[in-house]
Amino acid sequence: MDVNQLRERILELSHDEATPDTGLKEKALVWLNHAYIELMDEIQPYLQDELMQEQTIATNSSGQVALAFDVQRMVRVVDATNSRTLEQASLADMVDREPLLDATGSPAYYWFQGSTLQVYPKAAVTLTVRYLPYLTELVTDGTEETILLPKVYHHALVWGGLVWATMYERSFSTKGDLLLFQKKWEEAKRRVKLSLVSKPDKIVRTQAAEAL
Image 1 (cartoon, rainbow, N blue to C red):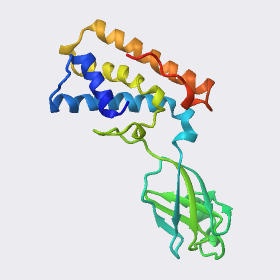
Image 2 (image 1 turned 180 degrees about the vertical axis):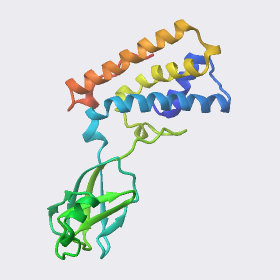
Image 3 (image 1 turned 30 degrees about the vertical axis):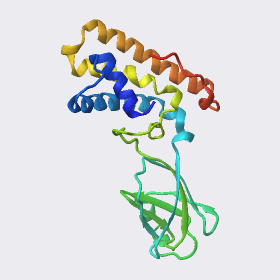
Image 4 (image 1 turned 60 degrees about the vertical axis):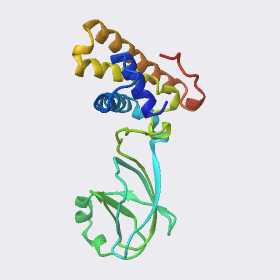
């Protein structure tokens, strides 16, 4: 299910709207994103390999490069020029190792702050960086591939969206609706976690749960 299909399903169940107006669609996207971020925060530890990305970048003669991507956590930095994995350090570490700051030769350490990555000793090298990116919100017309949750679990987001819909749009729901949606949402999240823990190498082969 892509972003629009998920949003439409949420609106069909929460507001009985087959042709919602633009304002309601925007609200539904907010509900969907709340559910998406909530679930991804909980299952991220089980999806480290799937979420990690890799980039090839090059430092300048001062050993610096401005990253064109956001990094939540750097996993590994390899100096591809010298075939060497660099050790992560902090600016404080580098100050403690002051002689190294002006050293020459192939880099042994790296640190990054904001969008800048620095290697020490300073040198112009090609780096291969492996990292976990920050989770970005879903957008209108987003494809299935933009949803970092495995496709077979996309249906779970509908229940989460319904929970947030009842919390924001109380006039369209009852306490019974909220309790039902919360129960279904917790069950869906639990099934996702159990599947990822028990079959971490067979995620894409897992059969989809019954349709909502």
